Image 1 (cartoon, rainbow, N blue to C red):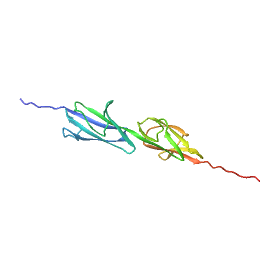
Image 2: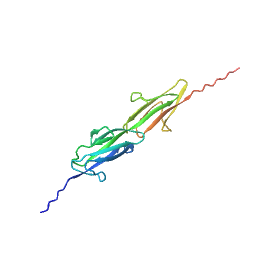
Image 3: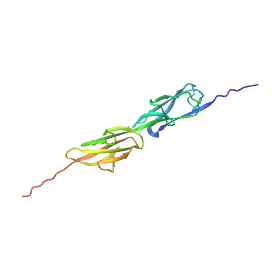
Image 4: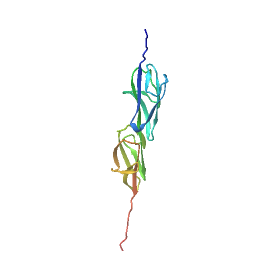
Length: 173
């Protein structure tokens, strides 16, 4: 009689959230298989992620569970098909020309990284002798007054623009 041993093979998938946040790679596995995505029962895989410009790495998750907070993550013993996600936040900064601008909904900071879809309130305050003109997002004028609410969608630099008041005076004889 001839006997054949069959060993379980499992699939490891890795992705990025949001998709534009970066890239992921399988760096190494204990069973030496890096190319097919199919790994032996009991093997481990080392995953690596690299941030795209304007994004900050947050963590690795497997389902709803946070499994790592470093950009390189070594899985536990592979005992079934698994999907890992490298999660990123989006970098946002706020500046002003001739005034002050802050993310007033988040402790009046001028920059930070936030999850996609997070609402932010931006507040602009003019320096003395200046009036608010507009906001720009990555150089493009956007609608709004001194206080606006935006939704985090892409890496962005918001600029509050102000103009100096002009006072004209004339003398009547």
